[in-house]
Image 1 (cartoon, rainbow, N blue to C red):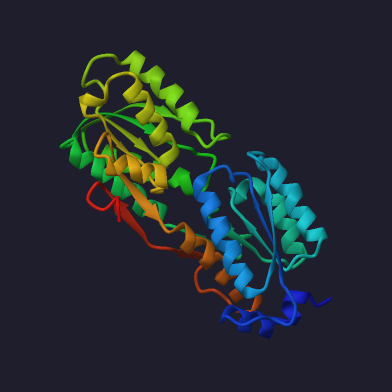
Image 2 (cartoon, rainbow, N blue to C red):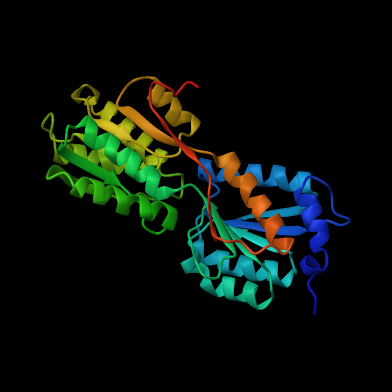
Length: 306
């Protein structure tokens, strides 16, 4: 049986160049993380690009339930969609990916992590972003101090950031990782990160006992900032860094306080590039690399307002 996506390869290529196909492609976008601002931004950008390509797009949010992504992928397979886009750890949804593979439906990750069953993964270079912010912290501390790390291992694009930050800090003998936080992200991560940071501040009450907070993304960095300010310890010079450069984080960095640096991912670029990558696959192109990286920019008080 020839799938619709294969039968209209020429139309898909034409659509990718800005034209419109004779009939609409159907694509399912499935994520448990739509509460995260970054996810919202690139899903919206994907939808906008898909509209230009004339596609029908169904966005499915499982609201933090990773296991439910499997059944939603299986639903998309039953619906005979042309492509599926996921924003979740592919290792945790292998059964769904296998169902899509059996049906000949390409699955593309949108900041999802690499997996042999994915046709491609479009993302920022998490290794580079983590190295940039971790080195920023090490430089600001002149290579010495106690650091709190906020990580999230269940999601590969974030997990790799923690691995790289650990490697950077391990290269400085006088930097000590005082504590690690893995926040509940069901509400975005701010509230639980604040609560956990408050507990760490209470356990380390001496001024100077905490030198920096390295966060793998902005939401927990903002939670840590709230905790530090509420505890009246902002004047200790605790350096905070995040990754994503969402609007609230940019404002905090621009204010010139404890939150000193973040990295601007091009969320719109990830969304658009994911759509274009899907179009290339539906057009029959064989990608040379399954990892497609979209450039990033370090944001400090010098350029936060730009």
